[in-house]
Length: 114
Image (cartoon, rainbow, N blue to C red; front, side, top):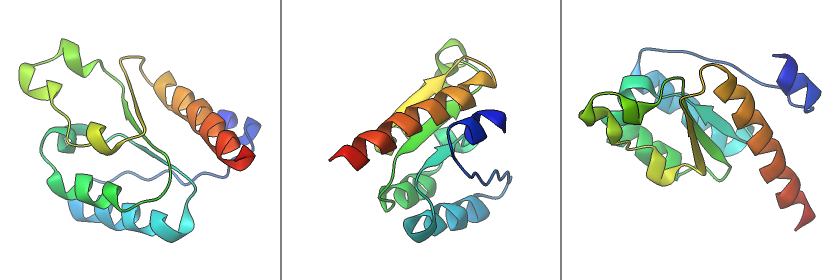
């Protein structure tokens, strides 16, 4: 992704329909990653396990949704991820991932200044 490269990031992009696999990747972040951008898709509304895994990471977490979940069915308005995420971006389509990279860049710079 050009945006990540421009910001000086090395990124690993992963996709899975398996909740367990997503949790394993989140757990890797504890020692290997500086930040997480996650689109938990339907697991947003159902997965306490993903929420619990995200609670254990000590890095910025940005939740991204391509669609605006608040314009969709009422059951999609609740996210188990949002309460443990640093921030949430939704409704901007795929460019939301670029917004998330910019947000993380700012958060990591701020952390370095401390």
